[in-house]
Image 1 (cartoon, rainbow, N blue to C red):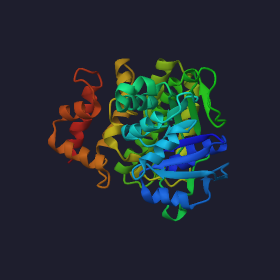
Image 2: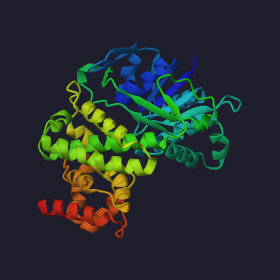
Image 3: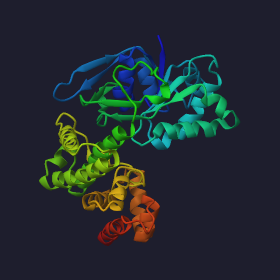
Length: 383
């Protein structure tokens, strides 16, 4: 049976990517640095993915093991060396730590073996390209030789997985909906067998539709909900003012998707409505604190707020609702989140213009810059 190695044994890894790889017939090897989680996975003969909400059902996953890539990087590299598929769900900023393990695996891989399919399943545009660059940097002089032992394909992934419950063990609760879209061209007509995934010729419209609707909407709801004192995403959307603000922000991102990719406006309106219904799922008590974490990353140049708002401003389209959501993100002050703490410190020590440049990456002459600077100034005045 072919082997699939998945870096990141958390809820997304077990409840989404790992589940689809299991259902595709792969033996699963999870790689993680959380020793307790690795031990718990290895102690369990199976785990269950519970789909919560209308149409949901349970899936039992078997045929897996886990390796601790911090305690035993050799075992993780050995798994990569024999794998048919390698995937990640660790967060874009963590890919550089995964890359050396993959390099070690490619080093010991049989040069005559079929190339391993490597796909980063992250909430970022071009995450696999980023991972490939990190692998090349870690490989040094042997980069060309080792990269030839792999095929790299970008992906778009979508499934809501709330924070785990301590009593669940390694079982995972997810929403029934999921989507894994993979670019087909790198595989030259012979993609890996993953029936639960969809291979497409042009990935950009799918990944940007998802990022600028699901991720923008989820984060906007979290920040606006937190600012209004709500605890969960569903509760936040029950507030008519927040629902209206989130809907307005997503209408602005849809306008960008129409001009950038030629997507149908009515199809996008239907997609937005479906997304908001998913957020309202009462069986997924997702918190605004979990969804809102890492505000600095989410306010960066090519992420869910600034990227669509920047293009909208360049094209003379509306940006007020997106900037309003960014203003709410500036007020996200969770003391348990390192980025939120840093952001609040920056608001107290930098000028508004300095903060906009450093956090968003916008140039002062960009047409979006003044509106974001005003949002920062308003937040600083409220401190």
